[in-house]
Length: 403
DNA sequence: TCTGGGGTCCTTAATCTA
DNA sequence: TCTGTAGATTAAGGACCC
Image (cartoon, rainbow, N blue to C red; front, side, top):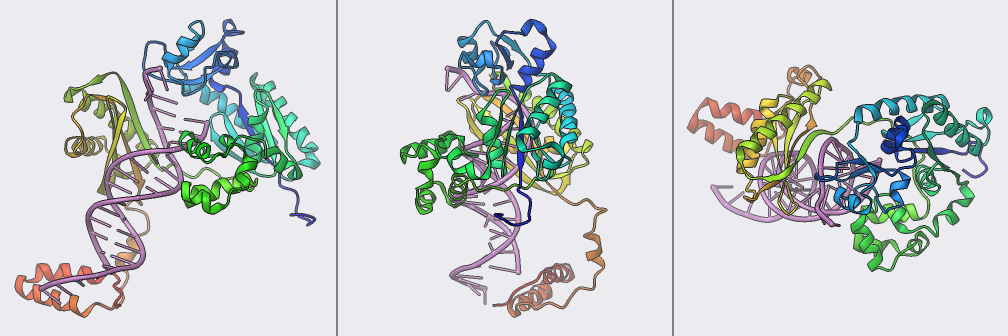
């Protein structure tokens, strides 16, 4: 790290500014100089997905209920998101990023980490690399991006946030501690509303303060994992490795009703549509899931999930619907009007054509078996005949550790 | 304020099994 | 036949992110 021959690691974080809103504004000149809010339309259930900086001046921010946004700024432009369009724009921008470095980790449509290590000879110091990224994206897409560059992912991400919008921030390794110290702890990764409450109860406001709190104290309030994570973050310790896309873990689809629903027929019809969509996406991605999950939210925002593991993984909409509906009927759920219903599958398993098969042809190894178990099997077999004996034999295939 | 949709990961509890 | 138990697996909920 210090004076070794290994090159200083540089990680970049690029984050498009108010992405959805900026794309809409770029494509529609009438929206210039106006507050733009993308999300639900006023009068409907939903929240803000993106707000441009003019809208933010009114206190509007993402995840705010649309009714509240409307109250704050009835004159804003309100738009439904056009995900297909944003995906197209996003692909183009990722292509541009690919001209800087091939080592990119996409985080979402509008955000990515870049490994910039060793690019100095080609593009100059980190600040020049950052300017180059911003320049190329603006040229190609007409959009502004905020870029943070630092010795690891955490510092890069906090850097890009620091100078938004249209910002560029480079934090050198020897500046990390002073960069972090005055920051509110709320800026740290994985620190949301609930954890903020805990920190404020403990009187911890800044990252500098957090640094002085013993790990033990943090563990008492946050659990071991979170405590360690926040302590490391406070010290500026984080990975600088890119994590290339790790396949998805689940596919789900859910919908909120405009008005809460009581009728089972409507619920089942809706579930059917959702199951069909999930199955379609699973088949397109050639995935079969063994776990079906039903999600349901009642009046009052009371949310429950029920899940069931199938013996055989599926991407068949009929199976998904059947399981989800059974979970709804037998899941011991309150009988209240339903606000949201959703269904998903997860727990991908190997398909029939994959390995595993080979195991069947292997000579079963001799295994030690608990004497008592053997005796039991014999006795049961004597009494009930061969069918049971076979069952007993399959049981012996499992390893059994005698004490 | 009245809270979308699509995800991931973590914690905890109950249940199964060797 | 009974019993205790550690570890794995399943299930539910919640925090968080974009």
